[in-house]
Each structure stands twice: as C-alpha cells, then as structure tokens.
Length: 296
Image 1 (cartoon, one colour):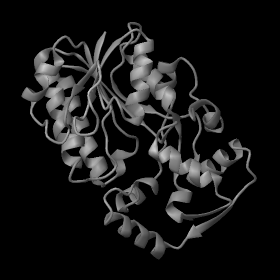
Image 2 (cartoon, helix red, strand yellow):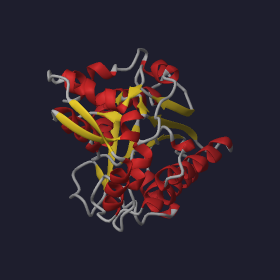
Image 3 (cartoon, one colour):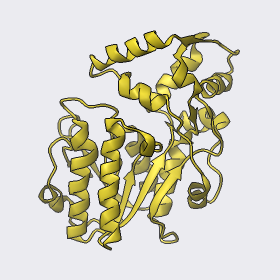
Image 4 (cartoon, one colour):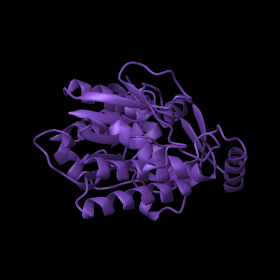
C-alpha cells in the first residue's frame, strides 16, 4: 500500500515508518518544513496551519491509507494544541473522505475520556469527528489508544530512565501512585502494521497496553532493576511543592513538566489488552523486559 504517515520523524512516527516499510509498504512521510529539511519520500505539512481539507487533498493523490501520529504534550505558539490535535486532523479526515482514502488510523491516547485537560479534549474532538465519518461509511477508521509508550527516543521514556538511574528520587505523590500499563513502541508499530495488512479488517477504538499494570513508582523501580542497579530511595514531594513546580513549568513553554502533565501523569492509565493482543497475535512485551527490547 501507499501510506501517508504524519509525524514520521517523531518518536512514534519514526518507529511506525520503519515497521511499515519492512512490511513492504511505501511510506510518504509528513514533516514540518520549519523543523527539518525535506528528504526523498517526505512531504511538507504544517499541523499549525493546515486546517482545511483543501490543503490535504493534493497530498492524498495515490494514497491508500493514512496514519496520523502527530501529537504535542502542551500548547505553544509554534504548535498550538487546538490546531495540532483537533482542527488539522479533522481537515485531514475530511480530505480522506473526499478523496476516497478509506483506511485511516489515528494514534490517540488512553485515559482521555476521564480527563478535562486540553490535551484530552482536543484528542477527543478529533476522535469524535473521525468516528462520525466512519458511521457515515465515508472511511474505515481505527483509533489506537496507547498507555505510556516506552522506547528509545521518547521524551517521557528518557525521563523515566533518568529517574531510574538516580539513587535518590523525589517524586510527586500523584505520579508515584498512578497506575500505568506501559507498552513497547515496537508493539504499537506492529499493531498498525497488522491493521493495514490483508488479514485483518478491524475498526473502532483499540486500547493498546502492556499485559500488566503497576504504579508509576513501581515502574521506575522496575526500570532501575533492569539496569542492574540496587533499589533506590524514593521520597514523596509535598503537594504544595508539586503544585508550585508544575506552575513554574507552565511559565516555561519548552518544559515538558507543567500543570497538564501533572494532571495526566497523576491519573490512572490502564486498559484491557485483549484486542491489542489479538492484533499482535501474542502478548505484548511485559514492563519487566522493556529496557532489553525497546530501549534500542
């Protein structure tokens, strides 16, 4: 198939592109012209401004399927979250419906139903529009909702690994207690490949999780153990200091730590892996094996 993959140079997108090409597909990777120079097989696209279907129609010529892997953690002037998560994906989905591109895969996130953050609400708006198009028979859509995605090149993965290397960690209480179900970035890519293969015709929303849930504190401890380190001393950051640190992050746009990050990391992020495992044809990588299998 000829596949348009948005966000192809990002953490998840880079892994998806490699997996799709190994499966024999031709991938046209979408990149922001402001962030990197175009390479062969890439097409320029700007999720901050390409908010009309007409901007996407020329890019869909000869395309059989679209995979949207673009996402931002927080709102910035260069990458406004309303446009990146909601307005531009909606324009892309409408263009797919107009151009007759039936296969659409949206990489979303687990736990957004219960969240009031702008991250969650903008993701949900794009999902709802895609589901409406699917209900009208205009596209065949699969929405993947992964838990914490772990792998080499991920900002959150690097943060977890850096915390795991510390002999003394001071972490916010909500983050320590929140339950997650980490999923390997390679398993997520394998699921997309399966969805676009000839043997599977699955649509709807699919929770993408590892086989077992644990608290974030226990996950960081497991990563430390996988690194061959002795158990660390973990202290709880008092709530007033937690709130203050997040508010300070709000004032620094490049910082991944902010009030929305605290709200998301402080909430459970778990689901049922049954559909995901059906796509993979096996269980996903267990969190205790992530360093050996995904940190490469």
